[in-house]
Image (tube, rainbow, N blue to C red; front, top):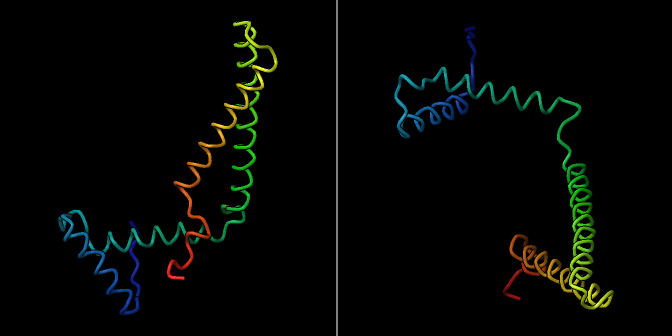
Length: 136
């Protein structure tokens, strides 16, 4: 293990000591944690961030969102195609109703899918009109 003698600003030293003391207060024994191990971990995390910042192929949120939307849209289209095929098989096997029955069942299924998407959307996301000032 290498050894480095470095100087740090007083504020940084205080923050490192606070992290060390917090580890001790949270139950770590002095044998498990030391100022040296705390500094080593902080340097390791800093190096990870430094490498990620200087990498050309860093995570691109916009590309990730675009790809996610593309995959979800494709999945939904696939589900609709499968739902249509299964509905046609069901109606043909029961011999009840023909294309009108298929259209009715598919409309019901798609309406339920849309309802469940809207319900999930309202549960998990804040609408712009809801996040405004409520005192107006």
